Image 1 (spheres, rainbow, N blue to C red):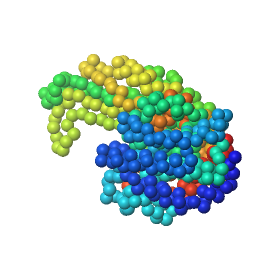
Image 2: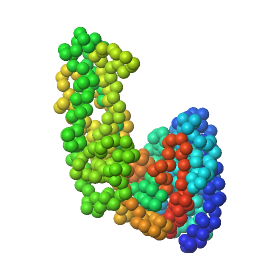
Image 3: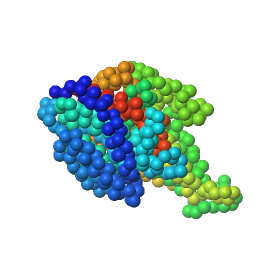
Image 4: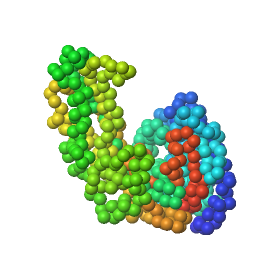
Length: 455
């Protein structure tokens, strides 16, 4: 059986080693979207595999996909009656552009004060290494109380393009009780956070067609319905004056928030003033009966992501455009599906589109929503770990975005994901000078040690 105190002592005694390993990992330019970095992707996968072997994991494999490989490993020494936890992560990173805005080499991670600067230090190589070092601390001083599996992919930053095929093909190998996914982050250095929900996504392209070609607006304006105007009117009608979405049946399957869930949302340290300062808007907008945190985490949305029509160059051109296009995304909550949302949007368009135009709707991208019971064993084990390390109860929140692996594991393996992590909101992920707050990171390693021990 593990001695948690010895494991914590090991983690504290090896801080410098842990940091050196993270710097080594961060030095590999594993940019998944660029063909020129394909050899680096392989190097990063090999680095993770070697780490797994060094901490006594078995059956370590670099498993090919149609794109970048997945790294798998396992330790099943706790026995069949013990729970099995899968640890998910990704070794790929975003491009570094614009390089001129970095104050140091993005692939030579350097410490400045309490921070480690470099691409991937926060998103999410730092989180992968925190998981590795927590397990290393446990197995170097005893044996884990739970079985452990690892799924570290190389395509998260490009939409986990081949992860669904991989999970379907290997779902027996990946069987587990739940997944620990440290890719969600904290609300602040003194605010340990557990994310219990993610919204799904339905992303559409709507095209409206009028005349067969662009027309002179002086000759045909007032006689031919302008597709840009028709599109704008259709889009405007998708919300009422209070921000409620008007697609027929859109809210039919939206769950009502429980009293406990609303209390958790109210406890979150997010104010209207902070949101206005962060976004730069003069006032917030949305359904008035829900606070902003609820609107982001637990309510569905419909947003216009882009509009295109007619002449948009410098100067003037009096054109009546032949077509107009809008990119529209819906963030979905549990029990809503992209397929249902597409039907609802089509029903809205059939009812409201004028006969003077034609329209086409294409579903470009989609993913389901996910929700984890905050009273589940995994959530409670992590909450207790956070309380031990930070001396306070964690915040429970729902993210407004989507993470593909969470839905795929839930759908094909039947495993819920426990979302957390030790990145902070100001870590500049995906931006120049990405960095990691090292004191929070070291605390996170200790929290994971306690988490695994709490079962």
